[in-house]
Length: 292
Image 1 (tube, rainbow, N blue to C red):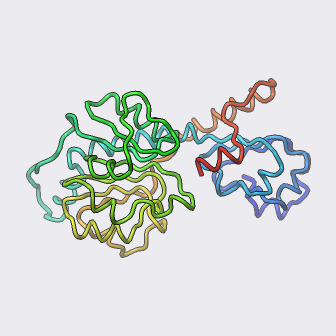
Image 2: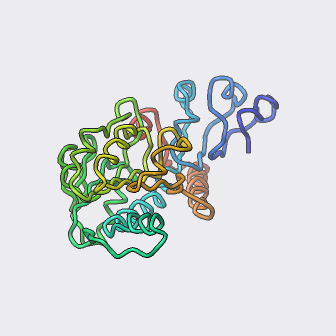
């Protein structure tokens, strides 16, 4: 793996490279790195967001970059849908209650998966795929995205209505300056009794102190967080002691053999590129701004 540090230690090693295959942990494509890659014509990024590696200097250079974000959306959507269905049965709540009691607990009241309302916040690749996968369930799906039309069968709603009416809200919003802290106390406090919040996007899209406060005040609500702010979460955080929150270690994205999908996508793009065919998953700066 060519990291930023290795490139700095071996400045001449990649001078003849035209195509750079990288993934998580690859080099930041800043001006000094690009200077060591004068013949670079294509970057194939076998991972999701390019936010960590793509700098202003890179976009200015005009080198195409292919990302496997579309493919990485598959396991995230699968995980989100699994959590949505489990939430409708109050699965985690029963698990935590039994653990606290150190004994079996009776099944409590749960909404169930027959015609509940599921809210999807943002309709990027993952949000759209979640909507598509939810077609296999007998649920009503509403969605909020100010830039993307709702898919067929999904009712577009305002942000306030999404939080006030959904039995489960699934967050898929990219983290930008505008979306940092988007989900704050007012929206969280407006959630209907017994509702669950699922976040597989970025931790900072939620106002985490506000979330903790609302969860403490309203034990009827529940949160399933695959991402936190900061990440990993601070040891001793109420995230690990409140009885109505479950934290998973950012595992919704591609793991183990799932990562082969990412490699298959960038290899397919490379084959199209060598054949002179249009790239399917190339990003430009404008597209990146919408999915950062």
